[in-house]
Every structure is written in structure tokens, then in C-alpha cells.
Amino acid sequence: MNAHDTAPVPPPGCPAHGSGARVPLYGPEFAADPQAYYEYLRHYGAAAPVELAPGVEATLVTDYAAALQLLQDSGSFRKDARRWRAFNEGKVGPDSPVAPLLAYRPNCMFADGADHIRLRQAVTDSMARVDTRRLSHSTEQISGYLISQFGGRGSADLLGDYAKQLPLFVFNELFGCPADIGDRVLFGISGMFDGVNAEKATSVLFQAVGELVALKRAKPGEDVTSWLMRHEARLSDEEMVHQLALLLGAGAEPLRNLIGNTLHRLLTHERYAREGGLIDEALDDTLWENPPMSNYAPHYPAADTELAGQQLQAGDLVLVSFAAANTGPALKASRQAGSNRAHLAWSAGPHACPSKEPARHITVTAIEHLFNELPDVELAVPEDSLTWRPGPFNRALATLPARFTPVRSGQRTVPQQGTGSAGQGSRPAPERPAERGGMWSQFLNWLTR
Ligand code: HEM
Image (cartoon, rainbow, N blue to C red; front, top):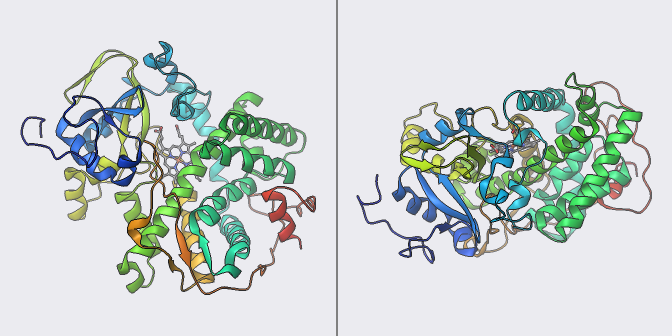
């Protein structure tokens, strides 16, 4: 379809409509109905001119075939953000709200070629050592702890009280964080994503992760941090800190939203309830229709080039709309026909998410455990009063208020082994944390009560 073939319907309230300006992917209108925006963007063809924040221009690929072409051609389209022309020319500053997710860092997400293979291999090999049984066990323990904090009330915000907290606690466990470091990791990563005092939060996070690296160099354990460190890629301390910060950052926010969006689906679609709570199916439907990472995969053409009929200059910012590609006519038709053509919620090509199995596993376990503990949990507000956080990259609920019959809090399953490591085999009991302290200390206290 081409811009001139049909009269496109503008998304409600879209300020770009009719002005010839770029379509803004931020603000409450976009957050309220992104699919209306994608529908509108499709009239430009396979890719469209968008604005990610005031003054931050990008080309957004909305078509499945064009997205695959971009994601799989790593010779022509590079990930290294030091190629980003607008940033280098000072048109976008480091204080832009989108800079934290787009500006260069020395990690595998921003690396190309041999550098990428080396860093990614270290990440995938280390994550592959996580034992699924232990991951289920820790996820259940953490879920039990979080429910014990609100279960007696009979109501909760399943986003803020549960989906947001659980991944961070699981990562602390996977990375073998002791109490004090874990508290600061939780503080830092929450602050970074909430945009509250983000600069301070980022420095707290990097300081804490740096200390974790020093601790594990001196005293390695059976955890992802120690496995990364012992990997044949021989990562330097700086590389260690950046890969760990990437795992936390690339994992925590989309995982929170995968849990939140799947819970939203289960609580708002009668079908799953009637058919006996098909969590796996609700999760797959969420990945197709409401993927947590909606627009991302930033790439930069290595030279002036053409993509699906669009002229691009070297160093232009090009992103993929996973959400638009998944729901576009081509993929929708093949999904209905039962074809194997996969959705793009995990991206595709050399930078596709290396952690989809653990992410799925954590999500299903967290939701299953919640439903087991709170069997009559239901939405506490009308569905149409729910709001979604603004921003171009993530599809994220602001809150998910729910109610349920209160349960007695403080019950917990006794761990068969201590916490603090993620692999197979016997592990040492956790060190006893300080009686007071941050969220991670309190969880460790609860476990050892
Ligand atoms: C255990 C949780 C997770 C971890 C540790 C994790 C980690 C990562 C890492 C390290 C990368 C970069 C790979 C590379 O550049 O080679 C990545 C990419 C990606 N992840 Fe995940 N992830 C997690 C969960 C998720 C979830 C829940 C989603 C959404 C369904 C997701 C979607 C993506 C996407 C779309 C990319 C590609 C980004 C790009 O091309 O720039 N991830 N992930």
C-alpha cells in the first residue's frame, strides 16, 4: 500500500496528521492507542518517519519482511550507536529522555561483528547454565514473599507490587547478589526505569555492579556473575560491569511488562478463564498482539542505502516496530493460516533476545504461583480506566489494580537449599543479612526467619 492509494485514518489526537510532520511515538495519545498509530504509519509503506521524543527523528519499519531484511543484514545495518549522526552532531543530547536506551555502551547490544559474537557468547553460555528447576524454585519463593506483603489486604497493584518487583529479585538471585549490593541494584535499576533521579540511580547501579564484580573475582560462586567471569571470552572488569548492567536493564523492564501484559490479558479476556487459565496461550497471544518491547532494535546504515523503497543516509536511526510487524496484514494472515512464521516480539537475527526461555519460564511460574495463591483474583477497576505508560519503546501498564479474598500473609515454603546461587548442585546457605535494610535484605531476612 502506498501513501496515495487510500485516505489513511489519523490516530485520534495525532498532532502530526495533516501537518507533514513526523508522527510522534510519545505522549498520552500514543500510549492510549498505539495500534491506531501503527495502522496510520502503514500508509507510508514499509517504513515511516517518526519522532521518538521532541527533536529525536527516526525511521520506523512497520512491515514484517522489511523488518527481517534489516535485522538479518548486519553488514549494511549496524548496532554500534557511535554511528548515530544526530547524536554526534549534538542534535540529540545525552539528557534526552530516549538517550539511556539509545546512546552507546560497551555491551553486546551495541557491538557488531566479532566483538558482538565474543560478548554475546559469554552472555548466552552463562545464561544457559541457569538450572530451570532452581529458577522455578527461586521464582516461587520470591513470588511467595511479594504476595506475603500484600495478600492480607485483599487488594494490590499487580504491576507495582508484583510484576515490577519480581524480575529484579530474580536477577539478584541469579547474579548471586549479597544483601547490601542487592539493595543498591534494586534501588538503581528501579530509579533508572522510573526516571526518578535517574542519573543518581544509574551511578548507584554501576557502583553496586562494580562491587559485585570485585566480590566475585575474590570469591566466585555458582551464579551468572561468576560464570560470565570464568568464560573463555575473558571479560575485563569494565566489560563485566557493562554486560551485567545490560542483562539487568534488557531483562528487568521487558520482563516486568511481559508479566504485566499477560496478567492484563488473563484478567480481561473471559476466554482464558473459561478454558481453565491457559497461561502459556495468554503469554503467546500477548507476544503477538501486545509485545512488551514494542519498538526497538536501533540500527544505523553503514552507508547511504535503500530499505524497502526508503532512502536512508549513513548514521540515520532506524528502528523496528515489533508490535506493528506482528499485527500487520502479512503476518496476521499467516498466523491465521497456522503457518510457522514467527512473531518478532523477541526480535530476529544476530541480536535477537538470547534469554527468551528463562524469561518465559519466570513469567509463567510467577503467574501460575499468583493464581494458585489468589485463586479468585480479578480486576478491581473497569478495564477502560487502565492507563499505559508513555514512551516509544515499551508497552507497559501504569498500574493493574486487582482484588481477591485476603490470604494469611507471611507463609512461605521452606527452601530445600540456600538462596544466592543459580546453578545446579548444592550451594552454601545465604549469609544472614542485616535485620534492617533495603528490599533485598528484607527478602533474605524473610527467607531465613
Ligand atoms: C530474563 C530476562 C531477559 C534478559 C536477561 C534479556 C537479555 C537480552 C540481551 C542481553 C539482549 C541483547 C542481545 C544482543 O544484542 O545480542 C536482548 C535483546 C532483546 N530482548 Fe531480551 N532479555 C530478557 C527478556 C526479554 C523480554 C521479556 C522481552 C520481550 C518479549 C525481550 C525482548 C528483547 C528484544 C526485542 C531484543 C532485541 C533488542 C535489539 O535488537 O536491540 N527480552 N535481551
